[in-house]
Amino acid sequence: MFKEYQAVFNLLLGTISEGVLVVNEHQIIIEANESAKRMFGYDKEELLEKPLNILIPKNYRAGHDAHFKGFVKNCKHRKMGQGRDIFGLKKDGSSFPLEAGLNPFTLYGKNYVMTIVIDITIRKNQEEKIKSLNSKLEEKIEQRTQELKIAIDELKTLNIELDSENKKRIQVEEEIKTALKKEQELNELKTKFLSLVSHEFKTPLSGILTSAMLLSKYKLTDQQSQRDKHIKTITDKVHYLNNILNDFLSVEKLETGKIIYTPTTFKLSKVVNEVIYNINMLLKDGQKINYPEDIDDFSLFQDEKIIELTLSNVVHNAIKYSSENTAIDIFITQDHSKTVFKVKDNGIGIPEKDQKNIFNRYFRAENALFTQGTGIGLNIVKNHLENLGGTICFTSTENVETIFTITIPNNATS
Image 1 (cartoon, rainbow, N blue to C red):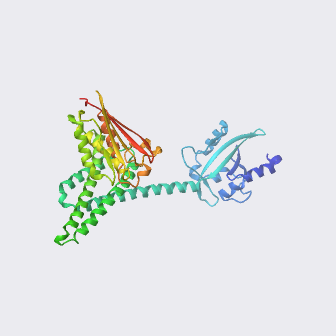
Image 2 (cartoon, rainbow, N blue to C red):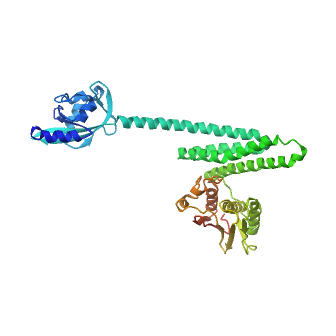
Image 3 (spheres, helix red, strand yellow):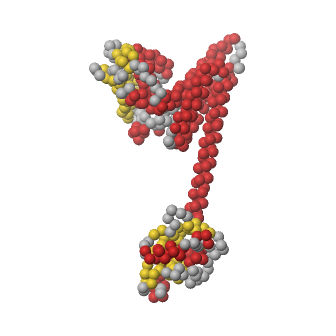
């Protein structure tokens, strides 16, 4: 049937990298290109006039005739094996996975089907490798989790005298694990959590271990100052680790609705003075905080601890992300219904591409990755403020300034 166009037809078939088979309505192979012959392991002309069944594994032949006749009758283009895997049978008896597209046509009053065959063995092998890699990744995550537990146990051993805090830490660890199990995107949170703890715990733990070892070297009476220095290092780093764990505890309480707010009436200047007094020890050389003006008559009926936590977090960030010899300005205004805090720094700023994610939990801006932090503080502050009917937003220009604006109702709703 193809004799008039045999040369052109053979040329076209020879240029196609996929296997091409043409069968008549009786499922007899009347044409095959070189790619198909190589794919199924047959020599030149060996496939011609052979039944199509020689290329189909025995366990797939059942019902094939009925499917074929129905397909020829409907005369529609489609893919074979949609929703299931299909296989081809080689001359040597081995099978391989494939994809096949069926293309019916009629020539000189007779029906034919052209099948385009693609060997997908490599793709299937890659899929299996990906499955294996995913399984190994889960094992590695589990291993990292165990390593983290070992590191925390070592910290407990080094700080036996802080037994009450250790008990609190154990409780927090259990609550963190419970919270993580409730997350819908478990794998993503697990990866971020491990990365965070590895980074934020490793440096303080190293400092504690180093100071603990050095303490044993200062045994003389006149070396008390050196002993005090290392004792202070251990205490500071333990408090730092405890603050991280308290942040995780706050996240869990916020998500489970366990936070109970206690509004009271208080002078705003009292909170501002407390925040600035506690944070002065964190100032870098030449840094200063410009105190807000005319706030002596400002009062709030709100949860005082949450207001202090919010202001402390934002001012602390302003100090941390600003260089030496810079100023942090605090502005506070109040009308009959709300109080507005503005905290302005002249620091590294927040890259524009990162600004939309800055309140997301665990998120760290690109230019802050090498600065200590958990990426939790602003997320906690935002949730507290929203629960109290307030808001927090910011404007920032990289390497110029950042201004955080906090708005809170003067009176907490009952």
